Image 1: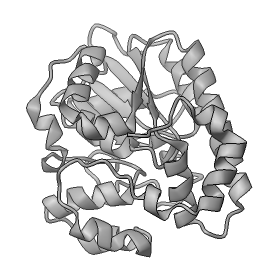
Image 2: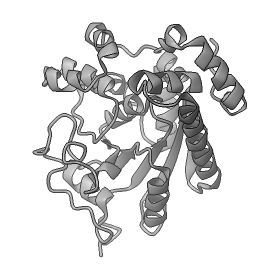
Image 3: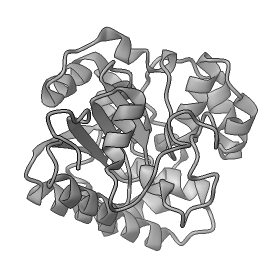
Length: 279
């Protein structure tokens, strides 16, 4: 067993959100702090996932961070990551809430301190993104899935015993420096201005948003074609022509079908009150 006085991993922060809520952007910003490593959605390291999903989105299977990481119940994966990266804080944005609950229960038996960020985004934007990517899916099922996920995150947030905070993606995108300073205080680390230039830093995420990752690859002259092909065709021009600055993405307001928006309000308007963004 590791001697806790020698343990490198000191903190683990979970970013919990619905899909398409900005967790990749937030993870990259926090992961650009000199003491933080952004792991992405590393539940995908599980062998039930394909080798592509289990690989670093930038490096592939030969990633210097992930290629030798061992995933078993007997080995502390967070300590492995901290040893490999020499970062004392691991940021995780896995979407599977049951998996996150299991991780929290395991980590509570270690000396690592736990943090929880509930990242929120207007549900209408989330639903629009999902339907745009998977137009064949039933809209009612998509809305119900969003409601169920939000309910699970709310429940976990309520019972979480460590430090926790709620954050709107829209506020992060419009007041990035102020929000990042708040999050640094929350994580009890110093604010570093270079965090906002997240695209200039080295990252090794599993899973996550292909569009945000494409911007990092573009800034660092990485393999753009592979990442571009992973972005749905309707969004490729948007990311190819975008600058690197952090901007609020409100495309959903022009894209969402009025009938879908009305149905969402009928089915999930109450649940969306806390997430709604009308500015």
